[in-house]
Image (cartoon, rainbow, N blue to C red; front, side, top):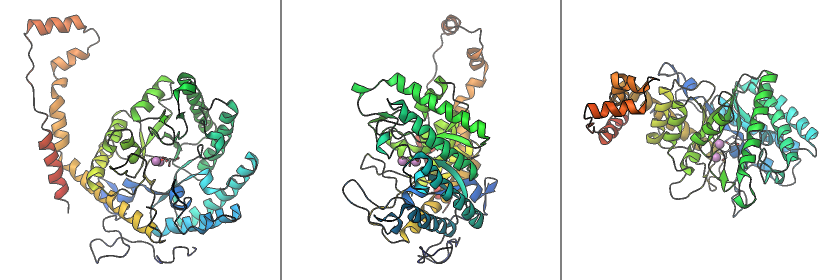
Length: 443
Ligand code: XLS
Ligand code: NI
Ligand code: NI
């Protein structure tokens, strides 16, 4: 193991409520059984390569602020990539979370040609495989960066130039195979540039057809190489483009159904993308679970005072308890997990800040998992929900669903019985109090 993070000499361990300060997990206890599984297996936590190792803290007004020597100008790109990989695996192993995620370009620098890029990626992937063996760290998902290079300014799959589509196909083929080679549990497609800047130059229907064709080709390649992981689309409404086609889970599901792709893809839901779409994180997860497309999570949060993807580390047990409640209600993760798609604030420039940020986020999720388990065991929410819809299991609900029932028949029934339904309380405040009761009992 290298010593880039020598301020944190030992792996971070569970210390419970003992002592204060320092780096330790207060709640995350990997072996603790929660809702029938080890905490580590319920949460399936992953660190992302990009924001943590491939971003130096720059923003649109200023240069990087972090101490990431491999990003310095003038470095030999391959040497820098090796040094970055050493630091990344040192971090994963010291943090003790089981997974990581990467884009092709996080791992390896692009070469002058596609073939050279592939050779670079192959070399770094071989080395990653060794490091995974040594550390026991696994791959939650891989992906291709189809948004940074100027060739993708007008989209990858949705580009008006078919040559760009083909270039993107080559990149995804290689990233998918790298993911397969590393035993990845999923492969993600985030359509960062699959959208438009102005409708004045855009054929909406053609771009949708192109995107569907691309996804069909990816699914076909997945089958042909025998990759058994899950393909995930990551919804986001805008940023970088004015409007992105994968707007939210509902838009993604409609798109998949329209093109006959619903059996091939699930969703990777990001907290900050949900709020950018005008939803809550809870809403997006509940929607995906209820419609059978739930796959994985990019755990982060936005800032309520501004409207962009600030990718902050999650720190709200209240918000995440409801997210985890829905996930557990749906049976928990299969291939998915919680990936920290999160950025430090620009002023968090000590190497150890990366640990503090992740440790806090891990404990937040662990505490939220405990609350979710308690909410399920308590049963008040599911009981109230069942009671609210109970009449649909009765004779009237059954009759409505029978195929030979028609609108006129229901109208006759209503007239015959002078039907006048009695309004029933939704008991929202009562239920909110119940959630608080369980949450507060957990301290
Ligand atoms: C950007 C996305 C990106 C994807 C991976 O907003 O969240 O980080 O997760 O390409
Ligand atoms: Ni993301
Ligand atoms: Ni994001």
